[in-house]
Image 1 (spheres, one colour):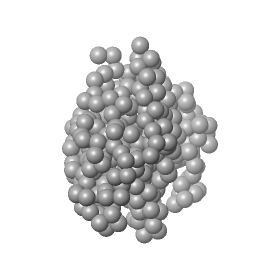
Image 2 (cartoon, helix red, strand yellow; image 1 turned 30 degrees about the vertical axis):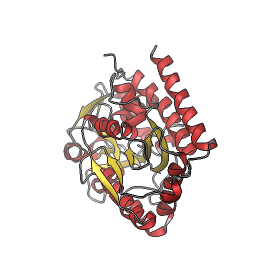
Image 3 (spheres, one colour; image 1 turned 120 degrees about the vertical axis):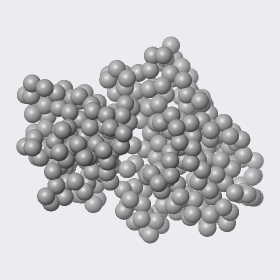
Image 4 (cartoon, rainbow, N blue to C red; image 1 turned 180 degrees about the horizontal axis):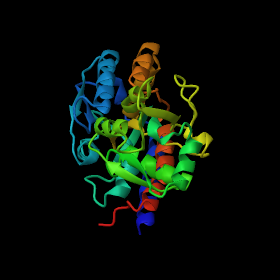
Length: 330
């Protein structure tokens, strides 16, 4: 029944993408925006998603000559804010900055959400895929992914992987690593990456796959953490000498996704206008450099490109969630 429901949701989503791609809008974009536009950020002020949202809002306000405002609505692992945006009037004046939970992982982690992940939202544009990295405490004596896997297979006790809670990017990345590497790990949950890093540096836990921005400073000269690999599909431009996990475990790719969505029914021409505007903004060298400095390599592309990414990521992370026994049952 769950698979049938998911296929139905994907079919609805595909139909919506077809409408965006193939049908003319209602010629509303010519006069849009005519009043302030809200970008809902489903997390608290000061976090990475909030900072990204405010950079976009500032640039969009300049380019489109109307105020773009960030509204923070935190709660329920981001689902509260996404639900609020999804149920807003589809008039082109409310959008939402989504993370991987919105449509990709939360639908499988939680039985009930305050919105239909695929039927209530349409894609606008991919913003960024901030990289995760694999780090291990120096006391393990490993310098490569291969050595970490070998250690994991010979240890009597599971390796302790720090995470930021069940269903978080670090948790699911660790579960994917466990599955592909064929080793035993025990996830240890923390309230934040900063708290996880503190216990990592003391050796209370052994390793983590978490955001580059959260962990990279602890791997610098004299640090207690060893940078083993990046969790992205390709090597990073700023860290070309650091291998990917996929070079040892082919196909491994575990970095979160940030993107803009709109309530279903938002006029396609407005979606297209916002897509074009954001693509122009993030392609500017100064903005791209600013985002990269924050750990956000630029994304971009069409709404259809984003839809394909979301579908691919849903398939991958659903399998991980099922394998880890995290699938919602009630």
